[in-house]
Every structure is written in structure tokens, then in C-alpha cells.
Length: 125
Image 1 (cartoon, helix red, strand yellow):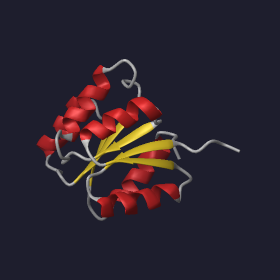
Image 2 (tube, helix red, strand yellow; image 1 turned 30 degrees about the horizontal axis):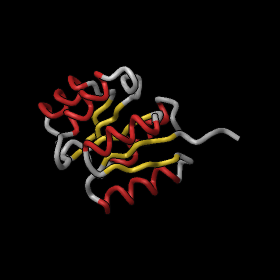
Image 3 (cartoon, rainbow, N blue to C red; image 1 turned 90 degrees about the horizontal axis):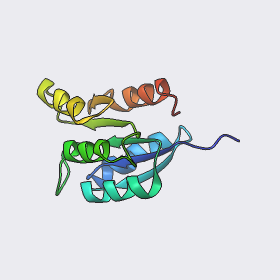
Image 4 (cartoon, one colour; image 1 turned 90 degrees about the vertical axis):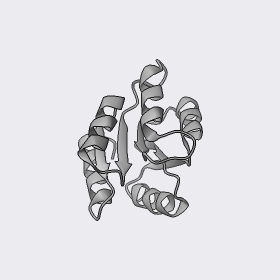
């Protein structure tokens, strides 16, 4: 049996995190959840997920800061980051890509579908 992809989901809204985790688990992914930047960094180092789905608006440090730290550290630089956020302006998207994100998905009515398509295209589900 093929091992499930481990996805670190970084989302400060418990309701959104729970719903997104359920959507991803239905695709046979193993989900671990962090609700802020420091927890996300710690979990990335400890669990070495195959991919990180990262919100921008987090308490204590932004998703941009988390992404930059992950990409600057030799132990986590290889982990792809997909930003999934309601901050959907073109400036926000550019900031996300400049921080090192592989993709930037706005939270809209197609967010889950777009995320699943991206994860499929990247070979994670």
C-alpha cells in the first residue's frame, strides 16, 4: 500500500482547518495542523511533511515570514509551500511567490478544488 502524503496545514481558523483537513483526508492525505507561525516552523522541522499549505494571516508572524524562514533553512528548504489565503490581491500574490511559495491560491468558492488540482499536479495526491 502506498504511504499517504503528509501535509502540514497552517490555518488559524479552527473551523476552516477542520473542513480543509477533512477535504484533504478524503484524498488519502495525512494532515497535521498548526494554528500559528511558530507552531508551523516547529512542526515542519519535526515532521518533515511532503508539502505545506500555508495561510498568510496568522497570529504572531505572517505566512510570508514562515515561508521565508522555511526556505532559508537547509532542513526545510526542499518542502514545497502552497499559500492558501483570503489575501488575494496581486501584491499579496507577488509577496507570496517572492517569499518562496510554489503556488498561491485565493480562498474563494474554488479554493478546495484548486488546491486539490495543484496537489494532484505536483504528485502529492
